[in-house]
Image (cartoon, rainbow, N blue to C red; front, side):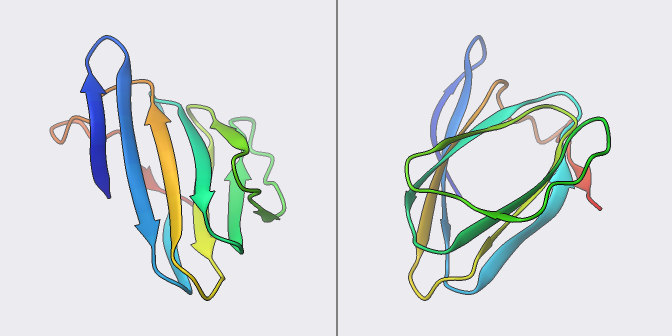
Length: 106
């Protein structure tokens, strides 16, 4: 993961690359929301759990679609493809390693 931009009043933008056939394990943020955009990749799958506990069926993330991940929504991502995937994501707060606001899900 590469930090691209941070502003305490606005949030943070990061870039994540994912090797083929790799995943980012499920986790949840209770205080921060994120927006994701798949900039490169052909077979990237996302699973979300909404704050009310409803689990979504995994779905394929389309290129350049803006995915809203609200605070409290469990989420995971998997690159099932044979090429590297690139995901840009914006967080509404700057990451604080002293208070990471991240716990495993499910």
